Length: 206
Image: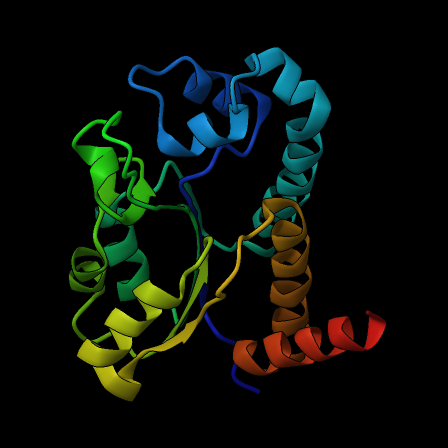
């Protein structure tokens, strides 16, 4: 049985401490701008984000038990390193859509993936992948089809991407990834196959 090497990267706040630190940043990250939606950090935490952080905490604890590398406040350099060392890389991040109302910064004017070191267009994300990466990249961000398409055009079948076309709720995403990584480590099942099974089970339950 061949067990994949996993790495999990996150550019989203995973804890109360990181959430409030992100909410206090100037300028406000686009993810926090949308998450707060005009409310205070305390109100948003109590109403919604504490539950997200609980799911993230369970994932973090499991990854630590499984000795799976986890990088918080992930950057482009972290993505390159992860794709140099792992077969399956899971990336939690925010897709920043361009704002067209004129009331935005230069960074907010472009579409791209918001990481800890800035917002990067799809081409730059693809360039950050290790040149010889031949694994699976699970793009846990909203509307990740555009980024996956860029990677596909440039890498062909060399890289397998898992993506979505809709908005992504991080709470169930943390739960699902925790379950799937645990399943793969126990059984050796391919991560992509486990993802398909999970999607099929979800469809049957709807």
